[in-house]
Length: 117
Image 1 (cartoon, rainbow, N blue to C red):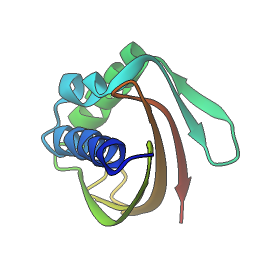
Image 2: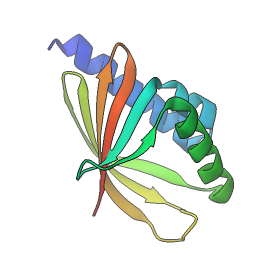
Image 3: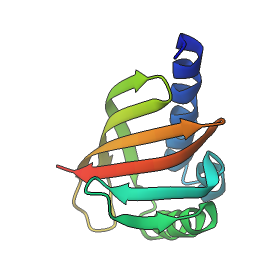
Image 4: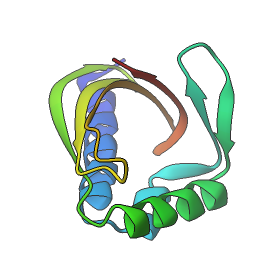
């Protein structure tokens, strides 16, 4: 994979993180493929499709109006981006430490795997 592909992948993930922090569910979902899939690291599918993603995150942003994610570490290998994230101001009041693996194809995030620490 070229450095250009890695750079494009990192920029796409960064844009969706910016939209998350702006609480803009539509802009957040726009980074994802129409048939995107979100899994836990064990492989269980728990969200399918851009529309479902947009609806879920609109609800999240409404219920946690100050939620924020910071990227502690990012690894980019071709069309895969791996982030170590800290999420604060959650609806539950409990901060989260997560690892997120993003797979990019054709300029969109197609698959995501998430694990919590």
